[in-house]
Length: 183
Image 1 (cartoon, rainbow, N blue to C red):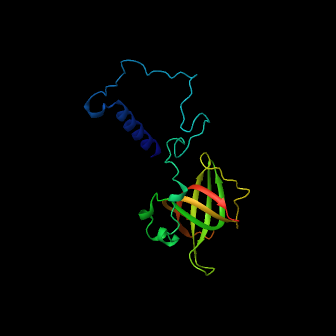
Image 2 (image 1 turned 90 degrees about the horizontal axis):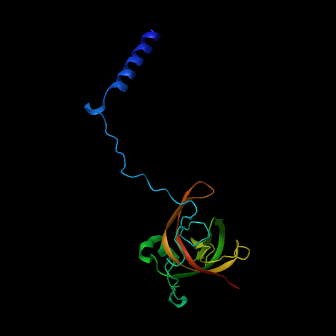
Image 3 (image 1 turned 180 degrees about the horizontal axis):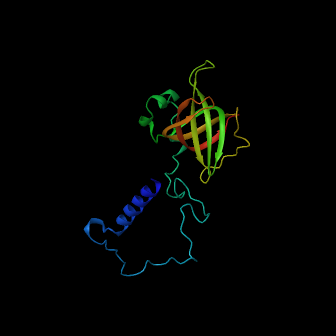
């Protein structure tokens, strides 16, 4: 029985290989000239200058310029970002809050800030401010958990992630323009 199945398999495979697809041979296109070879001595131009690292936002001269500090609004309640982030997309905003978490990842520093909207201890919402370190240097020895900071940034999107308990969380992500430790 095994031999018969093996023989049928060999005959079918041989027939498939010998058959011409779609009734005729497939023409293989040969280019008129060979593909030009790249000069190995020249380096590939990476965005972000000659540092050899790729930047998600492009080189610094392409990034939207930082608005004048006087143009930042501090009258937008943090809860509005949760309700309708699109209404404030790329609007320069300023918030004061307490650093909850600082994460350094490649050329970015993410600072999660608890922004209070009322007098109660539970009346706060968190925002995540992303600082591209090639534009905005962040001293993580000074900006650390529990420190009160003022952040200037522009809302981009809602950041979705899982917290320590495995719950999916959404928080506004701002592209950071500036951060200062409040005295």
